[in-house]
Every structure is written in C-alpha cells, then in structure tokens.
Length: 196
Image (spheres, rainbow, N blue to C red):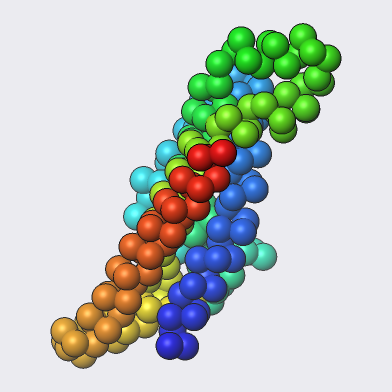
C-alpha cells in the first residue's frame, strides 16, 4: 500500500507541474507560429528518449538532478508535456475562427476570447491530452524506482533481481490497474465536462 501511495504521489506531483506548463505552451503555439517548430520539436525529442536514459541524463543536472523523487518528478513532467501541448494547440486551433471573430466583434479582448470562447470550446481535446499524459506517467513512474524514487517499480526491480515472477507481478499488476483507473476516471471527467 505504501508503494502504491508513493507511485500515485509521483504521478500527481508531475501532473500538477505538467498541466499548467503544457497548456500554457500549447496556447503560446496558437499565438506565435515561430515557436511551433521549436516547442513541438523539443517535446517530441524528449518523448523519444527512453525513460531510463532520461532519468540518467537528469541525475547530474544541478538543482533538479540527484537520486530520488525530485529527478523522477522532473522526468515525468517532461514526458507528460507532449500530449498536453499538442492537444491544447490542436483544440484551440480547431475552434471555428468565425466564433472567435464574433466574440471579438462583440468587444471581447484577446484574453477574454481565449478564456471565455476558445478554451471552453477546446476543453474536450485538452482533457484528452491530459488523460493520455496521466496514463503515460503512471507507466513511466514504475521506472522511477531505478533512481530511488519508490513506487510500484520497487516490486518490479526487486522481482527481476530475485528472478521471482510473483514479486514482479506484485508491482506490474497494480501499476496496470492504476493506469486503467486513471484512463477510465479521466475519460468520465472529460465526458462530464464537455457534455455542457
């Protein structure tokens, strides 16, 4: 139970950082075309780096590195960014321009159009990105045990070292269940929030 709570805490802390950062970067992409290539390119590169390698790259970095949960949270945050950035950009870019122009014609400022028109209309797509990012984070968090961050990966790595399938499954099955629960619960929240 303790390792499950550690696992959930790692994911929650990473998502608390990734959601606002990813949404802000996604919004920036809709406003500044010159940033698209750089931000999406960087997020794509991070996503292609194997998770264990990313943990290894981050360990020697001052302030964010080291052994433990701080490095794991940074890595999980970086992995979660791509789906959130991409979906925020796609959602806002997909809002009918005529609707946004009508809001401007009614006297709304750019900030009001973003907050009161574009984000509400793009919410379903943004939430889908958050959902994907959360499920990815639940899976990648199992590897965080390799750098001393705890979580359900502790069972998996211990089981591999002991060549004991039962111990491996003691970490793998709950991690898979958490991923499914995150997907189902966020899918439910997505449907509830976008049904309005």
